[in-house]
Image 1 (cartoon, rainbow over the protein chains, first blue to last red):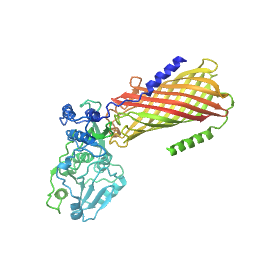
Image 2: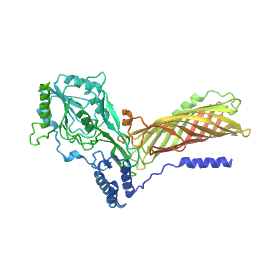
Image 3: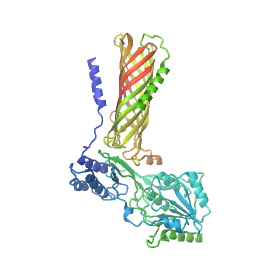
Image 4: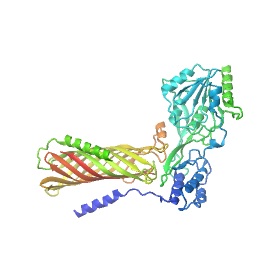
Length: 334
Length: 260
């Protein structure tokens, strides 16, 4: 009986031990947790040629347990900016650290100019998409966020309405991204067959170069839904980030599509989230997504036709005008 | 909190009504049970795919157990069906995780009578357990799927005695899976990539080198005529380490049951 009791006690001790967290709950422990999370999970160290150990030694020297939360946050946020990554944020209750490249570049989009001088405030809106046929008989769609769920039925109604247009302008400027499933829904209306969309990979271990073989992924045309296969121009800006960057990179590979505007904001790493012992969360690029040529687009997708808006002209959108010119030329040639 | 207690009481009361059908021999420990159980207690969850931080909180469960003695008392089988829910918080108390699992287990155990009142049991078991762990603030890693099927051993000891002149069965039981198959994504693989069709390296052969599960139960069945009441303690460990991912979940729960 004693043996049985002893066995039971030993097993209970084995079972009862909850996992101990690796880091101390003080300021130094939180700094070390952040650095280690990034060290083990961030996927672009080599691509961006960042020496993360050197970054550690430089920033660790500035951290002490006596500093306030705000002081620690500022140091940690600045350290993360070394990665030059719009998907990398430190999220605390009082602030969100960020490296948003689009804040440093021309906006190249003004909704008011389009509403007033191109649409005459006359447009429809469905599934987060604003749409209308412009006077030149070109369709115009503005999609401001890939977080806005696209309904297949709504998209049918939009494309059905725009089907009489000779060409279509898809404006994704200032679209900061969202769900990649919406990228697939939208792209699947502009392809005729199975299309290589790109490659995706992920970290397989804690080493900086522990990455899986890139996995090719394909999009199929949307079955039993309306497609648009006439000339298309996609308008992009530095504010076209993350899922929008992915959308532009895929659309750029289609024969009937021209990309006009500025280089996109990039952000080709699917972000994951982790957390520090003090409850701050950190978001970072984890799974690199490449274009159909196997290239990383972390720093953006270059347009086919580079145009900037004239900031002094509050009545014209030079990027949209260029798109109209391109479609006019293309339809004339057909 | 009051509403949770009320729900538990309602569930327990309902189970009491369901369990009322009679036992043939009211003064003897039955040769098997049909038991509805409620578990409530403590849970600790560590899932490095979601967070490097260990969360802790509450464990709640509902379970049904059926067991029968057969072949002239030399063997007994036992079927367990249940679901358990964990709601746990991080140490900073600004985020929570939810875990919901379903469980189906069957074992067939040989019985050895040690004395007239005590018997030992041991035999093979199989278990299917699946569910999800959800963290709603994560970006592209908000959820992870848990699924495993395994085979192993179940063993225990029963002591039939009396308390307040009523038959009571004291029981210890352990379920110890030995090998099986379980699901785990790769280290930082997104479920989006799995959705896109990359299904490589998702199924893993589980053995004690990479996975250890244990469920221990210690309790008493008090046989009150037509009804059997159960009071016990259950602890469950789920630990695995594969693809550089680590899971270490522990629960400690009080078990209340009613059956016949």
